[in-house]
Image (cartoon, rainbow, N blue to C red; front, top):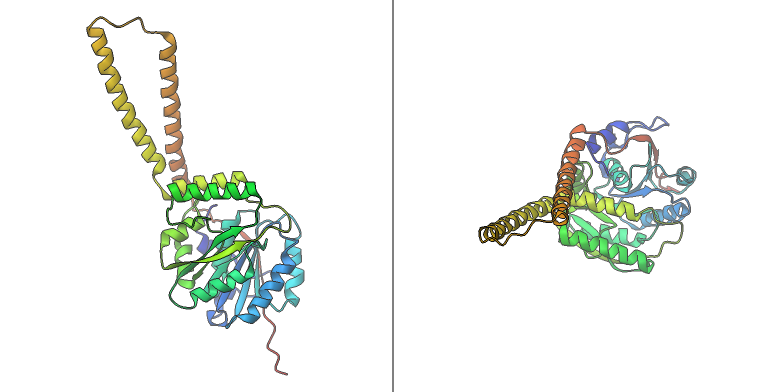
Length: 347
């Protein structure tokens, strides 16, 4: 989840589409009030429904709306589906194709970097978050009382094992990383143009987009919704990715690993002093037996393992510092295509 220098690299890499269209960042933002960023990976089956529902949403909201689809190295026919359906959909859209799969958070940042709306929402292409939630988020933001709106799950139709894993994951996040996160986590959010600008300014790699959003602060509001069951395909949000995400969140937003090391070291010193006093007293009174080989080896094994663990934790911080110093872009855009909305019917 590398976001290094993302705002600069994406904007400079998307100056022209393959058809020669100019970068929409050169046009005034006044024409677009709302933007919906949709990362796409393995969503060929749901693309027609996503486009249809977003087109209907664009007709309901007051002010222009665009959809920003970011194809994150999808291995299926999602890109071809988008290119085939968008021209006739009546939906104003941008289509960004990344050079490979960089992960959903990097894809979202790619979309945020080119989105033109004054209010921007992010939704998944699997339709587990209803499109009506986007409308609710925009309604909260346009009141002017809130800068960030996050979708908060009131329930979910996921399988029991998946639901348990998700609750455990977000519970640990709240307990050890960011206590102000919602109980069910954040899968979808919307924010104002100011928040988007500040979010893209944060130049970090191996971090959490949601963590950065909460670190920024601003005026937040929670929008309740019921997460729907996935109708097509399987989720790419695997256990391995969840563990990596938690690892990134811990090292990026808390000093918990270092605190644990310091505490363990302090307790070890106290234990060593206590043991030293006891051994010295036993030696002075002639009560020391011949030391055994097994206890000595166990102590050495424990100490060596603890040292290796400590070096690994410190090394993780050093590696992340090195990764940030390289300033690689979070993702590399390959194509950028524009699909303007049809002119209004004057008949």
